[in-house]
Image 1 (spheres, chains in turn orange, blue):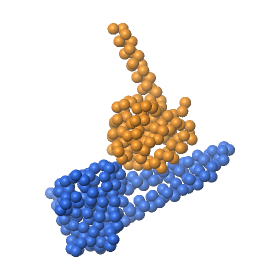
Image 2: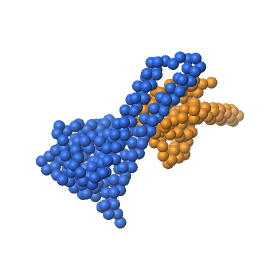
Image 3: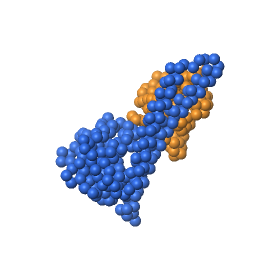
Image 4: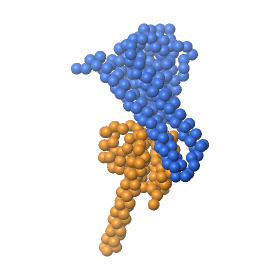
Length: 142
Length: 219
């Protein structure tokens, strides 16, 4: 099954060409240059992975990440940035990002991360479903 | 105990570091786009090897996109080169209009991140000043930083260089409902030693709508 990916980056030239290459690899890709719009998109759609630029106008990547996680904790976020500092990478991972990849990106590496993200998300969704079922059965037994 | 000289040096190093990191980030972004274009060419070659003919129009578009990115990188590196050479001479005659235009370029990323636009109209006549260009850029950057913080998102800040009878001024314009005097105080506090080293003054203008950096002749 195809991977469904959302890419959020304020560099439109980068956004356009990266999405084209990912689509050529059979992925279903949604793009936006606005983190605010990204938050609206994740309200109505689900993704296997979100590729998020760290530094954007309107809202920084870290804030966008935190708000996405509040809404959908199972979503897997990979930070992509032209601002590669070890401390920023550590901060992002501590907050629960799946990975942190500096630009320029190796698309094969990114594709692998997206596949891992899809598996991680599926496990989380399964766990959530089991927890819901368990709770429903417990409630019914009372 | 830190001396005035230490403070001036520290302000300069911090300014240099901030600008160098920003330039590195911009160059990384350009490389990322060029890298994806190269990758797309590889994808097209791979598909052509397997019998799918290459689309000539797509190839032309890729070549055009790469050229655009090279021009983008050239603008960044040219600004970086001028910025690096601003530290060459401790005292030299320089054009204040060119210096403010350079600062506008260097500060673009910081402005975009804050939702601010920087405009640097070219003066109608050259505005020569004798100064330490790097030190003056450091001073003007902190004034601009304070101004952008005060004006907030969605605003435009104008950096205007002007010749005066007793030297030159840089005006930071477009304050709206902001207490410029308090911004001037913050900038003065942050810049005490550097301001004295450059013999510059920072104040709100009489209408309280502009931050004015005044540079006497031979500063």
